[in-house]
Amino acid sequence: MRELLDILKTRYDAVLQSDSDRLFYLNIHAYIDIIVKNPEFLTIMDKYETEYTKAHRDIVRPYTEDEEVLDERGRQVIKLERFNLYTSGYCSLLMRIYLPLEDYKNPDPELVGRYDPVVFLMLDGLSRTMTMGLWSKEALKTYNRWYDGQRKEYENNLRQFHANFITEIGLRLLKEKPIITEPAKEIPVIKNQLSFDKEKSVLTINDNEIKITLKNDKTNSHYVLEHIFENEDGLRAKSYYSEIIESKFLNEKIEWRSLYRACNDINAKVSKQASVSNFLLIKSGKSGYTQVNSAYL
Picture 1 (cartoon, rainbow, N blue to C red):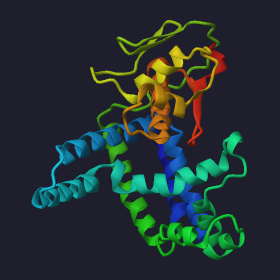
Picture 2 (tube, helix red, strand yellow):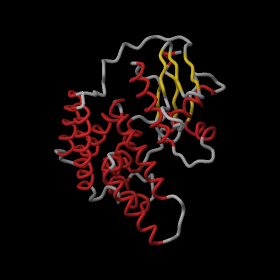
Picture 3 (cartoon, helix red, strand yellow):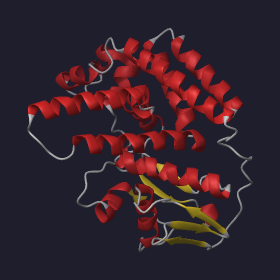
């Protein structure tokens, strides 16, 4: 764990020492990538995101048009966002910088040639992006407000988040509850020994039982697995986020990013409870999907 923190600190310093906007955004991507791709780090961030979502929902309900009540709710939301690890700096870096660059770096084969303009605004600036002729100048100027003159704000977000995140990890280490309890075991080849008990929300891989939902409330992770195991094309099939939303969240407002995070949550739980790595293969994007790693089929 301490080695990972050293790597994170190196990336943090690289962001602050970037001598161009291009390097600045690329280094932020590399910093966030360490958190997103590490199951133990990601589990921490998912915990705080879930806490924020629930607390925010409790604040804004029930619906009202009373202006005094709405003003007070607004103040409560601001306070909540200031003291939650997910929203105090991390969320804006994830959504505005990391995810667009990650989709550009690892494009969906079905979307080759369809680019997010904010990637080029970050890496090339407004003037050069306009010369590409792929988007209207009005649209580019609107998107550019997220980046033009905003570097200092993103730096402050990173400083605040990094300090809070390092503190969080440090406190866990002091309590002698390490996030990584043992080195990951070599991936075993498992043949046709997978099942998912949707009543108990328990995924079974060979002789290992992984608890997906620890309480009665079923999570997005539960419904992702439910869809995968109900897929008529079998476990080898790709389960697209759009299909999962249609089958499991038809009357709810949910985006692909929530399912992308749910898939990472499943991998984190499987890694922690069964020492099995990369159980699910995960692809981000609106046309993204997940599927069971063929090594376990």
